[in-house]
Structures are given as structure tokens and as C-alpha cells.
Image 1 (tube, helix red, strand yellow):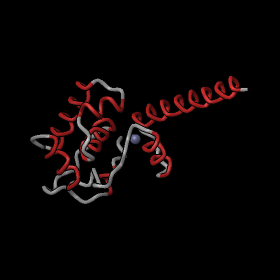
Image 2 (cartoon, rainbow, N blue to C red; image 1 turned 120 degrees about the vertical axis):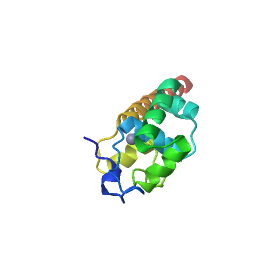
Image 3 (cartoon, rainbow, N blue to C red; image 1 turned 90 degrees about the vertical axis):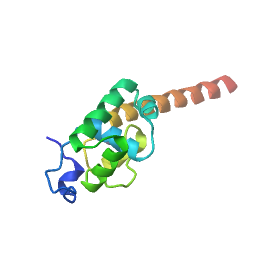
Image 4 (cartoon, rainbow, N blue to C red; image 1 turned 120 degrees about the horizontal axis):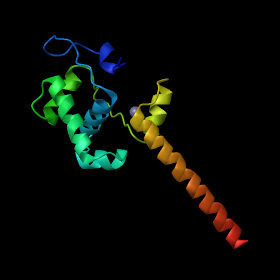
Length: 134
Ligand SMILES: [Zn+2]
């Protein structure tokens, strides 16, 4: 039950059905399309690098790609990735989901929670500093 953006995109080059990638596979593929390495993706999302590797491998296999670069190319052709930067896994990604009136993906939820926790911590630290100064 994916609401993949590919459903409304152009047909894949081969004319076959658009493979359905799950949200995690899309996040990894989208991040790779923006130049992030697996290590960067793993660190940003707080995932195990092996999981990122596995998701990339699964996405590539579903697309019939030989490697991640090929997978990104095929995903763009298939309309699964639109080629526009689309961040996932942080506050900006979360805000983008909200702007598109979508349910935020899991990665964006995790990133948003971390963002809010950090903001709360920073606010508290600022209040404490103010109280100490007084
Ligand atoms: Zn997201």
C-alpha cells in the first residue's frame, strides 16, 4: 500500500510496471540521489549502516539495477524519484511532508522528534543561563 510518487509519474523506460519501493528504500534511494553516502545516511537517521546497505540493495534489485548509481538513474526514469532534492529524516523533511499534506514517513518522524528534543534542550539551557545570570 505505497502511495509512491511513482504512481503518477511517467512509465519506466522498459514500459513495465513501476516497482513499489517501501518508505525506507525510498529514503535511502532519495538520499543517495542527493549524494549522501551510506555512512552519512546511517548517521543522519540513526540506522545501522548494514541496514542502509540492505535497503539500498533491495531497492536496486526491485528496480533491476546493477548498483546504487544505476538504481538512482532507473528510479528517476520510472518517476519514483523526481530528481528534485527531497530530504527525509530531519525537520526539513518532516515539514515537506506536512506541506504536501502527507503522513510523515518514519524516518522524518524520528528526525522531527530528535529536532524537537534538541530545541527543548536548547531552550531549557538558555533559560538556565538567564536564571544564573540574574
Ligand atoms: Zn520523509
